Length: 340
Image (tube, rainbow, N blue to C red; front, side, top):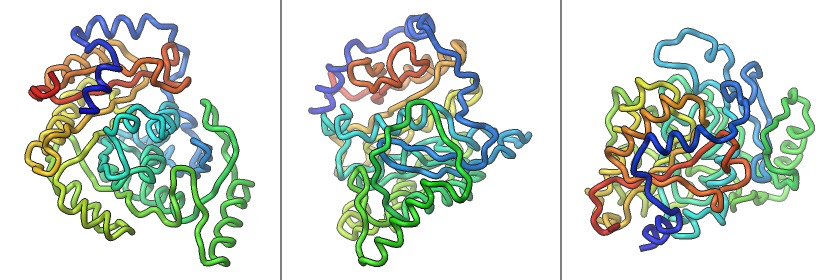
């Protein structure tokens, strides 16, 4: 099994959450403040993995006293770094066939931006973004604005900085020129990651970890938006996901248990999916190292249901390695005897 080979490559399984917490927080963690890219900008423009993105966010929601949280209203520093890593063809998940062009992935706590989905969706069959309903207006706008046209670029990838442009920005003019050119020729420009034309295999659906259940309908709701009838037909027969992604979702100790329970429930859908029951759903969790107490609470809870490994520096891109202030773990639901 390719997953077994990957897990062997990751090294020792994490057995004691307190030791993992100590090791990580003993690193020279740079000052990131809370980790926003720009909490005051209503629009930010990023180049991630060679792809230009215009992201709308809501400083107003972030600073509000909205019940249920507001952290998903803006973009966080780890997000473009993780998106570039997870979507790379050389990523170990692709290299070991844990992810492939036929994979279905669900993201928990995607926030308003959808950056991870925008980068990863072109490489897989279906990508389902989920979060609380309040982000729906912004994320649907960001999906539409960043998938209608395709823009190739040779600009450097995101390295922890950003630029905020007004409506007349050079990047937007590039996109508009590309769109007009594509329409005039009747074709579509190719994007990094193999995207062509309008990317329609990415879909948002509300999911609240505390109140909503994880059901196969999370997957079936996405099949209607596929522009590939063959892929849509194949996906419609499935009732589970190949991977769960949670990028910088762990801020509040009170949400640890609901998040972990949701991850476990989604992984258990695989047991009922006769088509893919021999290929476990994996859970990939990326986060900024902020509070050791909250981190250890998450890891202790996660390790009760999952076997856990940290992705080593040798398999990460520079911005996610040790002493960056970020970390990526992978979890596989316990009770899978075929994994040894």
